[in-house]
Length: 121
Image (cartoon, rainbow, N blue to C red; front, top):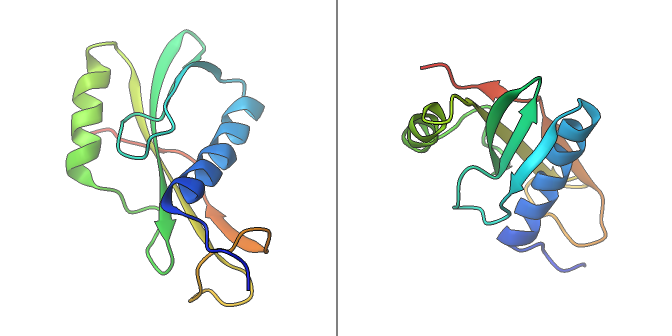
């Protein structure tokens, strides 16, 4: 049995998954913050528009599309000062052999990531 990933390791994994997608879609990274509670995790520029992106590792069986409204509202209020758009990126990570078990180092895992969710309100 491997060593379960720590919260920070799971967060870093989620950051890498989102970061690769952003890079592939042509986002330019202005600032990256890998601390889970320091928002936003990514500040990016695309087509001359700033994007504030909050990344969260979401534990199974929680829905990676569900976000903390209060946290996202704070980020959105901050983003508006910079005329930036605000997004949530929830990444569900679970053990491939048994979703009830933790994600272990060097073992297969399942990724449930459905892209950026724009916070409009």
